[in-house]
Image 1 (cartoon, helix red, strand yellow):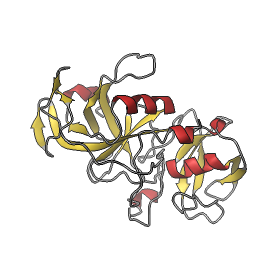
Image 2 (tube, one colour):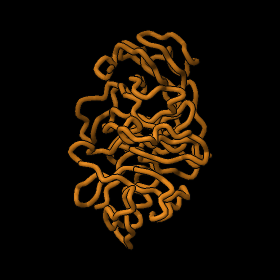
Image 3 (cartoon, helix red, strand yellow):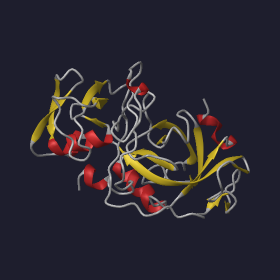
Image 4 (cartoon, one colour):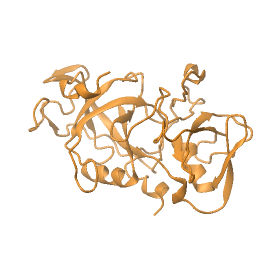
Length: 277
């Protein structure tokens, strides 16, 4: 099964195209308004599935500040004080990862840069994945991330109807792509958010994800702490999209805490001091 097929697991369904961030460090793209006709992507690896079930409220969470299961933060209304932080309530949860050209075959298309030069010839299926998801890795090891839309030289992205150009980035600096702040994103740390709800750069604690495995062998459990570093297509309102990095982790986390089940988002948690700027 290809990355594109596997990464469908656990991701948000089709909907109206809400604004998605497109930024590079020092660029003018961050200043563009986010409208239904202005839905460019960067640093986002988003694959839609046919439908998204409604958020299930009242999900179980952990008592903040302890490891014991509790109901005290689950589905709490926005701005509700809870032990160890402030709950914003229940959010839709989804997961996204990072496509690799090496996992795709078939007919090729030209992947253009912002000046309409050729970055590489890549499989059509890989192009269709990154033109929606925003970033990916080339077979030769370089990272590519969204540069701008409305590129006359770019192939049409079937899922968005946009013509998108890309930047080729140094994989040593951007091994997993570029987020909405222009900085690198990190698996199991970065989440995409609606900046009108959670400002970029904000640490968040998600009790339901506290204790999740970091890989298939277990490893040290996740502490439930993340940073809002990205935004993306259809990530709107009370919705967080967790960057897993790998399709296998997307599938693993989706089995443990299914997409769209609903999770609690908490600000100002002392548990997340390690990710606080």
